[in-house]
Image (cartoon, rainbow, N blue to C red):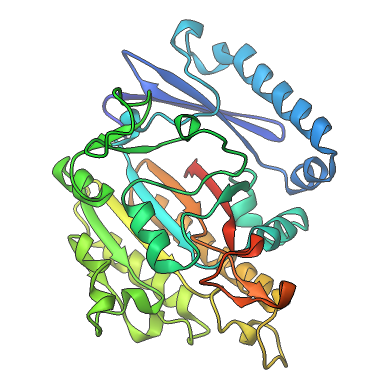
Length: 345
């Protein structure tokens, strides 16, 4: 378990409270909704009502700090994540659901059709870093994850990972992990992490020169034809592979794992019986398939490893004929808007 980090949790009906932070410093409080029914009810609320409900939960969280043994004066912003308390003390899983659309993610969440992902809170609406895999991943691997959808000022951008060489600000934002190097993987490796890449789409296929770029950022990188977009069981194959590697991994060395899940990316028609063409419906069906495999991944990882922080998001969306647009690599609201969440296993 964590050596230098305070962690406590308690279930309170439909809400689970977490406290995570340094024993001698900042502590953060995080809340997660456990009930699929409650998630649907909250999503059905009007925007003003939903904001008031969330504010009420946050205030209730602060009032119940004593339940978790957290002194009030040590509490950080809710529900921000202190990456300085996580890095070095927990594994980090960065899961990219390649090409997942925000509206599809929201639809399946509200319907309770993605029970695994629903256990870890709401999807957030965010801006994609790029309109296809290649530019989006260069941005994310440099620390620029999908940003808040309504962001108006760069100074207000949430940064979990802060590249010190860019000169965005004179001071590292509170709670951000400041790294040296060209990528977050390079920075984490310098701090003792074993960095793994499990590829999916063709940009991770090391049989081509272009496909070697992203894997080259990691200490260990893997791609198999069975992980590719055209394989219906691609996510199952990736999860099986990850769990076999994790079982043999050094328990004393922290892991940063990047996983590119490509099942939702085209082609995805085969996730609906009798279909021969991709559609928003087969896109959603692929997400439901992925959700089941993520349940296996999360359960298996928890059984093999200790504390784990997860970043889960899409890199870009895709179009299915909206305004005459198809696929991605172009700017359109369906491409530029993505779902995002982070949580603890």
